[in-house]
Image (cartoon, rainbow, N blue to C red; front, side, top):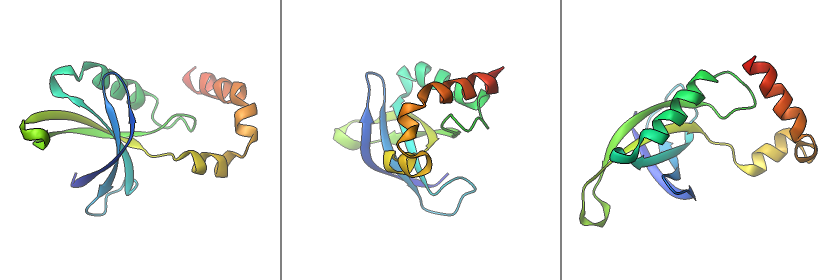
Length: 118
């Protein structure tokens, strides 16, 4: 997949999340969230990818579109990064789709997810 890493939109203890833009058309959305971790510490990210892949098709779960490994030369070093391609869901888009009731009906969302899993 030919893509460009954009700005950071989140950071955790083991990975960072960036916007990503496709250079060419691809069957997945043109804007993704890319979650990246150093390849040597990618086991948690690989587990997350496996879980999201199992749950593919559940409308309450962010979709995962696969992974790749890149080389990052920023900062003078050479780091290999494990990247997973995630559906990008901006909070304003979530509110537009579900409205304010979304926050008040989070328990209903969890029940829908549990029904999907079982």
